[in-house]
Image (cartoon, rainbow, N blue to C red; front, side, top):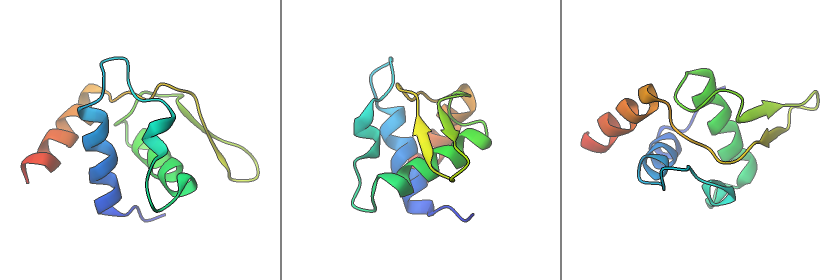
Length: 85
């Protein structure tokens, strides 16, 4: 699945500037809809940019979030690079 690069940047930036404890349901706030943001989070998790196990996918293909969502060290680096670009 292709990830919207603007949405990826927005999510990573929000997580970068979040409280050290991470983000709760507010991470899903976006005009594209919660399902699209959850899907983006799943892709970021697959790439090792958010903590493992915070996004799961059921057999129906729907994503479930285990809050809070936090960046990994790699996620922080990726978010900073996007922010500087």
